[in-house]
Length: 597
Image 1: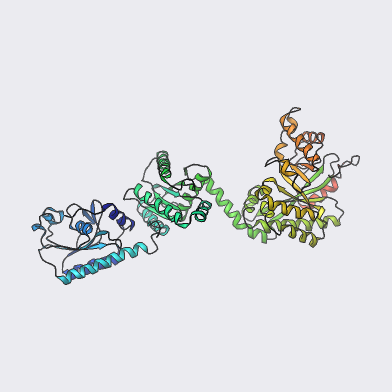
Image 2 (image 1 turned 90 degrees about the vertical axis):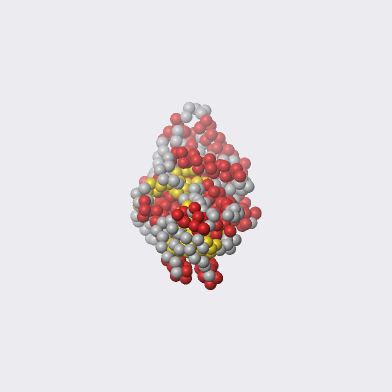
């Protein structure tokens, strides 16, 4: 017998083709039937040589699907990649004691199944119960049929089922195999594991700096590591560009398995040359077969992997609460375009801003409300941060400014003397034409620029300082008043603040909650007092947000804060109630509002 040559590589080639233990196929059965007819023999098989067995992809005249590799002639064919004819197994010094010979087989002829890279996978063989020889024509036909079987194996492997980079079954094959697993094991609980090699931005950066080949090599290495780590009876699947999945063994202990995965990922990461450029994550999704839609199975595992990355953990279990929250966010994003186009979903409300001395209404902050046709009222704190991260931010701000100016125009015609304050997002400051579009809307509604104030947060400015300063300067040059919103929660640097063309500082409501309960000279009062004093010295008007008690209002008044807004004075309200509130609350006529800075 010839010793196996590079047996590990041969077995790897066999397993990459992912044909072992696959279902019967008529396309292969035709080949075995033809071989049987050509030789006039009752038994024929397409036999694949595994590490310890001969497995039959197709068989004629035999009931069992595999036999031991020990002293199997097909193993010799696979190892040598040469045809083999044994006229009489009982006369052969090696195969006389084989399983085939003991079962009554006397004649054997086999032609190799050889890959393009020269690896022998097994053989197409014919067997007889009587000794005989094989003619040249018969062996030529057998070799041709073996080549046809090998072509069929590679075609089945390549056609829409195997990823060309990793060599692993792809997403479609996973879904098909999941359907088979569900049919045979419905109701069983299994753990699906997803390995996500890197974030999308990391892949983009790697491609830009190192080239796409480094990403390809990373995927190939990960695929090889998975094949080495998993037992032969379990498959790994390449379901997305840098994502792989596999099922854990049935009935594993969840906690112990998470520890095992964590250790394995750490071990592989140490060996990776790209460990400093990528952040891998592993998600584990417990699945009850048949109780979850196939596409949701992958979605759950993906969500768990993203949760792991967000929590800076190596491995994370699927969370139904997190999934529900993400699905809701997706639904809101999906439905917002329709909301913008509708006439009754989006609306504006107005919260009064009052002078702290006279309590006279000086204007209002414009706030957005969304009444979803199915979900009902959606909090701005929930949907606005989502919208600001998408292309919807630009049309949304245009919608708000346009509707607010339209309303302000009607109020001015009724004698309203206050101003309106409108919130901007970081995306607005990165639009090169934003200031020009605001000016066009002012012209459209014939509103003087100083009648509106645009609010922007510190973090929005710091995202792109140069672009933000350019847009703010253009707005200021046009006469629009500008305010820093939520001051104190971001960078809170008066040094950078004085370089911005702003008029108003709005102190965040988080500083107001216990302001009146703080003892004299306490940290909270000292901090607020300092912010007010320094803002005044820099020429800014100061507005306190979130004022809810008279005690807080009195405390702010002693600190000479200029304006305030909050539930103490009024909650946000639609246009008509707001106008009625202004008329009903003219302020103290005996006092004079502090002059604007």
